Length: 567
Image (tube, rainbow, N blue to C red; front, side, top):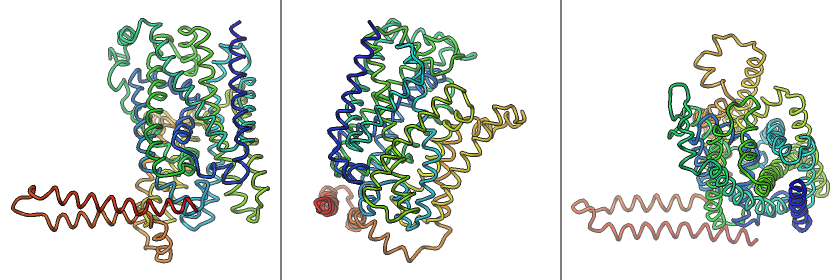
């Protein structure tokens, strides 16, 4: 009877997803409509699309169990970091700049943006190759952990679950494009919000409530440290900081995340979306990691793997109805991220690698055909990789999955962020950052494989460099990512100013210059007119002048942008 309930709910869910894809097919008739929803997506859809692409089943099943086991309830800081750094700051820092500059450059993908920003088609092709190499293993990692959950509910093989989820995702994305993905992300996000709250409450109630669960967890020691897993920062502060940085700041350099800002329709929508996305991340990510922090109350050892922790907690705590909810939650999380990744990958290969380099006269129908073809190909490849990994436990695939996030963030984060704000940034600094991020990830992969094979000398594995840099793919990703913030400005400042590109860049940055100049002029005027005898006496009037100047400067570019959008 329970299996009938599970199957019925999932069939209804899949049917709704496909129906939305069919209904959205009209918006997918053009390349811009299929890839970016014609840049007309509102704040709610954009915020939920961002959040559901951010948090997949890997978060709920894998990371929540692993980091909850390692850090206890201090793992909740990861969710808070994801909300503040990965959502709030990301929208505030990247949102408006990304939307305006990609519209001016008429770019639909991150590689296309790099190519047009630096007027170098080879840079676009290089970025496309990096995405192709590292995004497919990352896509395959989305399926990790699903097998144990579906085996618990249906007693079916892992590959069956992967094939079903991949097939349904392929259908609605191929038919409806970006808008189908956005609407389905919205529905899946609501399920995730509701599901996380209910599941956390049910699991804690099974242990006598929050207070009792914390008391029981405090009795578990880490070495000689009693109550380590209920402490403020857990037993491993360095490891916790690294995880927060990679999973929060690292998303700023992921192509499928940044692409959400390309499609949003207005500045006001960005402000609203920022608040919605932050609240979503706080509930979903914070709830997942908080739940995982209590894993040691349900599991005594992790010999079966970290992916077994959350399913074990759920099987001991939830009734069939709530398990059904969890199944839909996990499938929703995986499908939303999968659709976002394959959309980003297929558009990059078609528009940047093929149209941008191999066949520049590619027609509209050919582009649409190739985008859809590569969506299907990427879904099939990721599913095959996931099945092969699960069947044969190949360490190479596991290590590729581990380094993919850090490689993408290390290669793209610093160049992308600096290019949005700094005209002086050079093309060479972008190339060096691409090479450094990619080669460091490859070096970390080789070192990890050698360590698994027992080929590394003990002196190296006990060294400071290995323990705090190469000892984890997370550490490598973070330090590679941070190194970019040194490489880009250092290389750019060592080069001569590119006078030939200055006029083009002045035009590109024009929408952002009005407000900055007005603020600087108001500040200079304030300092010059400020009375020396009584500095507070006339401050109110001066501040009002400054505020009026700022408001006027902000309104002018906004009006210009509105007229451009209407065109």
